[in-house]
Image (cartoon, rainbow, N blue to C red; front, side, top):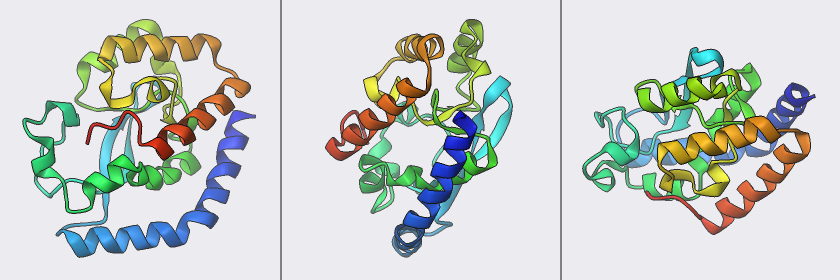
Length: 186
């Protein structure tokens, strides 16, 4: 049921978001050099690497590390990068990953392939068996502000309690967080 819900939601999302996504792509290209879409190597289910698309919010040449590991993240943002991140619009191309089955609407956020501490901790607790999500329980409980052990604790909580009703609750809370721009550091 979850896969069917993800697929149908992604198809509906593409229909409704194709025009706004096209406008965002043009704006990214018009305000900075490089492609509109950034393909990031991410860790998926069973720790398999997949390529996840996002609208590019960082200048070309920015190190491919978690934002909190950059000395001055704001210095690497494109002119519209901060806005895209604060509104979570940079995440919209991930609908493609949901259609492909690499991601779900709800699950633990996919780690960067070089976030070995997060990958290892998730593997120790069995979280790596879950399909990563566009949003998740950790996302609605702190997002960028959470230390890795807390993210994993929330991922485990989701894994143990996860069901379709819980997913719907997380989607609703995500909408509230996005509207309030809550928990976004850059």
